[in-house]
Length: 164
Length: 170
Image (tube, rainbow over all chains, first blue to last red; front, side, top):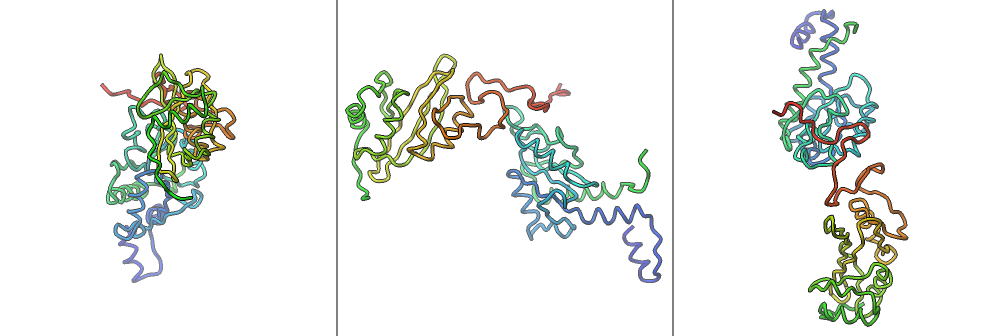
């Protein structure tokens, strides 16, 4: 899809391409993430954004505000006290928005699943999650794989079709 | 403020406190590394422990809560340290589980401010005359005090299920 665009640029000024592909190409290649590092997974998210396992080469720029971001990476343990705030911040994001649940705690409660009276057993109890990245904590490469999976998921969307 | 170790042992502390506050020590709780103080007198004893020249405990290292069990009482354990005289002391104060009140020592050691809030949050004992006694770690509308031995996890908090959903696990 992307290669055909490059070829056509060399010869003509008119490109014929599905608008869905263009929109999905733009959206998937700039997933600005809301850096929601709550606990140890936040360190691995920072490591993924650091120079060695660069995240910005995928277009993923860290943003501090939910209103400026496309994808919310919930990295770390979500306590019940924080759960109401997570929901509020998710509702502040503009559509189209996606959620990556990073680490065991955000996926399903993590090591606190049995006796953690204060832990939310998985962030998908309060917000809808698109991608789950397992690990405790997941390596930066695993988070990069998660973002790549999200990019693949975005490319399969059909933004132009009417939703009935 | 010269630093000079005083080399006082626990029995020396016990004798000096008994002399200063005659009925503050609980002798039934004899131990070899802590002194137990009656809750009603704890405020005055704490003032003495900080100001008196023999004690000079100007640093509250730690404040802990402890639950003895369903048939026991609640404890508040204070670890005191003196930077001038390089000595340490552990004080325990026992209160009943229901409605236990301990005098606050926030006006003596400021570290007690948040430590007492945490002890109240986890165990439920109140600290009288505390400037701002409210929950610290748990949400404000949480019911119950989790570190008590007979605590049961609530089923729902604001509509969210607290226990792990085990449907589909065999």
